[in-house]
Length: 483
Image (cartoon, rainbow, N blue to C red; front, side):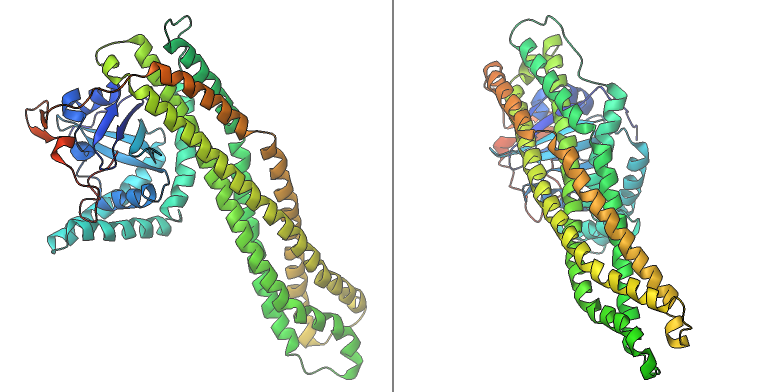
């Protein structure tokens, strides 16, 4: 099978209704798919589904989209001439119904190779399940579970966690490959001012993108520190239990044992507080990574809007037919900004809550640290019984680990607040909303559609929306997909 690569500049998109039937597209999609307009508009999106794609991938996609979340993935597509073209697809549900899929050339071949190996394994397994009598829906459901399992085995986490890393990585690589949106100085008509406005939005989102490295670094350090603190806490609880079990000391040692016994008595309470803190920090980390993904998606959508405007300004076959999609693309960009603003606000709230919890936990943890400091001062010049002396290095290491972990957390959480709060997503949203009011005047009502059956480039019949394609169900959920 022939694989047809395309350049990073050739971004494209399509919209579908709730049933996965194509409603709008740009000329780049038409050209790469090698289907004529009449064969694409009104056809179910599975017209380009490639047999290399496992049904489980689409099952994961629909679970996210139908829950109102965007979804991003590498997708192998099948052109009308039987060739294959691979894309990085970012798909989002639209408020007015339907879905928008923005696609670009995969710019991270290393990540594509890892995901492609998962696809290969899952597609092969799904084929075996189907051969053994499983239905398409059953194979897709089991395939989705297998994808999650294989990703976890690679240390990548769930597919949602994969997206948190995948989207920023691809968008950053795309920016490196193609730079900004092309300029068309002096472009006349109504499209020129719109393109100028999109440039401003794109550049402003670029300013947000500069924070991504720091945000990712903070999230990673939080994760490492939380894991370190968790291990230290569990070790401390075990040591506390061993101290409580010491019974071979005479009365002369009892004063020295009091700090250790108090520390041991506080172990369970501190463990409970830290367990809650770990949950809070995990939520803050997830919010940080999700916010990073939302910014990257908004950047990708702004890139697509700008390049579509350039496509229309430059003209060419099919551009007037694609023109009505300006309005939908503009609204989709505004929705992405709205989602970005929401996620950033949620992350800010989770971060502030985590910061307060860190301060409270640090204060509580200081009590056993002070107790241990008092014990160490008392024991400095005395020979300790073996039952205690064997525990000393362990106690000192655990207290040191806990102290250093808490200091790192106290330093990380407030610093992230200062970096985030210097940007205002509300102002960015206002700019995009103002732009959308201009976009509305440039878009015209779509006249696409037509006959119930259109012909492909090869003369094969393709069902259109008039054929009444069903809403994605447990049976066909793996087929009707905005890829």
